Amino acid sequence: MLGYIANQPNLESINDNEVGFYVGLKNLTVVDSGLRFVSRHAFVKNVNLQYINLSRNKLSSLSKKPFRHLGLSDLILVDNPFKCSCEIMWIKKFQETKFYTETQDLYCIDDNNKRTALLDMKVPNCDLPSANLSNYNITVVEGKSITLYCDTTGGPPPNVSWVVTNLVSNHESDTNKNPASLTIKNVSSMDSGLEISCVAENIVGEDQASAELTVFFAPNITFIESPTPDHHWCIPFTVKGNPKPTLQWFYEGAVLNESEYICTKIHVINQSEYHGCLQLDNPTHLNNGAYTLLAKNDYGEDEKRVDAHFMSVPGDEYETTPNDLGDATNNSNQITSTDVSNKENEDSITVYVVVGIAALVCTGLVITLIILKFGRHSKFGMKVHGEVKGVGLVDQIWLSLQDCDNEVAIAEVERITLANTDSIMAKALPGSMDS
Image 1 (cartoon, rainbow, N blue to C red):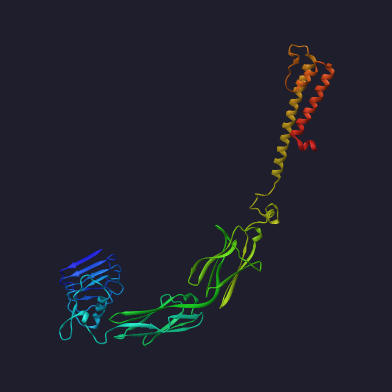
Image 2: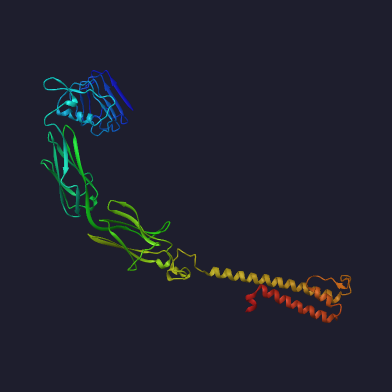
């Protein structure tokens, strides 16, 4: 988004948030107008501004504060009647750090009303501030206190402030003295890894010195849970501690020797907090039991226990326990009187079917015997090439009738009939025959 204003002699100031509605503004041009003043909060919401052109206006002074939070690539200020003072020294410093294809001819008017190039301007007691910490390696044991000092220089003397965003521990500061001090009391482990900064600022500019707070504290197992199946079985845990604690697992009170099948994995590290799991590859009922995690470092130790159940013992699922008998919510494995009755009915039906089949076979054989006994000279028996063609089971008997007495043949048929009936019954009801 571009903003362009020109030839507006009555435009004398850009006040707080007047351009704040244009949050996407990247380029702002205000030229050939009567601009004399820019508020320190004029561009507080225009964080995307990269290019500002305020050429040919009535600016005699310009503070750095409206621009210090912006990542400006260009600030064009030519043909403004600046007065040589410490308040515009930051513009000189800004110009010295930028490279322009076309050099800006910036000038100021000194106390003798003489026009001087800004790059040649010299103002006594007008220097960029600097800030230096007494200690850049801030380490403290949890529960102890620590004091940090910040020494500053610059002209005019800079204002000093401490930046301790999100600091949980109680703290107090004194910025009226040089060096300024910051005291942190009863340091909490939650502040480990926090950045602490000292900022020195005057009208020429600002400087900042920062250091990271390191808090040593004993391990604390903040989370552990029963195993869950994923790609592998995992007993998840979270451990805090600084320095990094060593981890040791115990199984049923004995040291657990880790291997490629059972090992500790750390998945996420957040400052002094470690998220991981004890990974088990295809555990069985032999791995069921109590697992204890021990975390230890130079400042103490902590341990937590969790019970793990991966698989039932083979065969246990078929055993009936008192709990199973009393569980009214799970009837999947119970045998009821209805089941027994249904089983007996099925067996009775089977017996009836088999007996019926046997009766039909016997009836058919008896009829065959009658035909053989009373109709052997009938037209239903024909000789073909010396053989008699019969039907079914009597083929072998019919052949014997040619050379044997009828009574002998009939006795043979009765024997074979009984044998076949017994055979059919035995195949259909093996259990009944055995009993």
